[in-house]
Length: 131
Image (cartoon, rainbow, N blue to C red; front, side, top):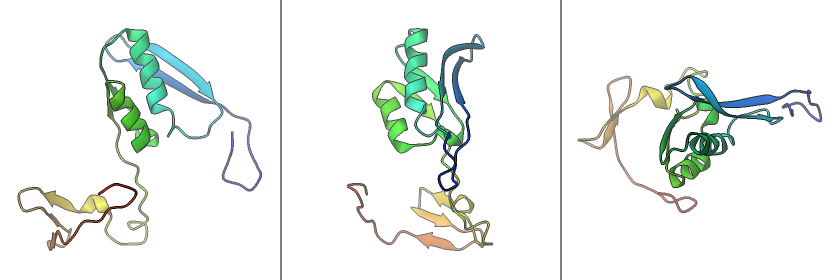
């Protein structure tokens, strides 16, 4: 299993399991030596779907599994994935407001900051074919 150190590693395994919540049984499992879970969601969800013989499936995973590509693969396979986004902002640690501190109001299409100020929509942009 790779680590963040320069040229170092540790011997270790990452066990993935998928559990049927109705019967509390493991329906799929896999052992990897990859140190993170980001690329495991679709694979494990598809294994669980096949093992359970389900035509569609809802899966729940922790934020370590969050990956837009993996969620898209699940969607294409008839699997609805519920995975919270990763908390990647360093703003809170630096004493600033984090994205989660801003509340969206769909009726006015604006955000309200923790100080009570309105943040109005100004423009949109396209990056990597995404608006």
